[in-house]
Length: 298
Image (tube, rainbow, N blue to C red; front, side, top):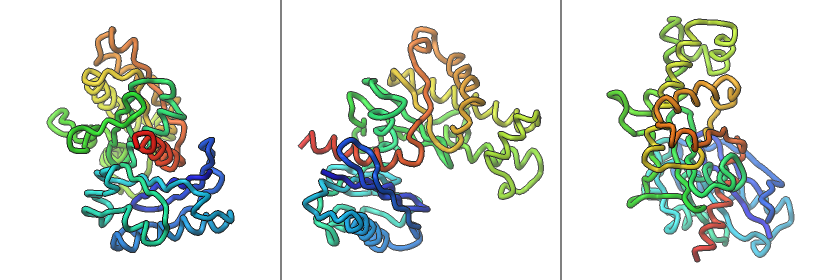
């Protein structure tokens, strides 16, 4: 039996065909066209799934279901995306729209939750009962997994730690990777468009004081924010993802040090820090694990 996992992003739609061993045997990427209506975006998504099936001579009887990871607040049981800020999605029944074009079960989940599921079942948090996954990017996405299931909270917004109040601001306004670029650009009086994370880390490794300072300030924020969350949910492991985390060797000790400084030893000594291993396939893998979980519930 095969499965289709879809990672719906503001820039691209990634769709993958997976086998029962959660191996991605085919991956296709197309532009999202986020300025378009939800109907247009979802029609293209459905056609992409059909294209993958046709290429492998698969019928709807050969494919178990389609799992979709999307930005924003989602209701997995109803198959609805209530709101996604970087897409024109507002109370969109994704399941119904996809099933206009392809007769398969459809499951929807928030993309950060999908990434966390991928790490929980096949990544840095594998084997744990309680894990926290943070995606550090333009903002900070968070997800909590307890006993193999996403903790959604009372109204579906559980894990939205980016909005957590810190130092008179919010966690993501102080600790997102976009903040790093903005801060260095201001220090050096250059346009943000002219630099990126790679530039900043390359300069820091060469001894640039501005870049070193900006990274240290960012890691202090991340460590403090992570510690605050750990006091509440007490995870066995914290997994960090996002493009910036490719700099694991440079960042690990700094974030770990900040965590330990802000945690009492009883908690800090027992809380593992890991970096995500699934990278660009996390959304597709997590969508797969989400509908496996949903099937178990049913």
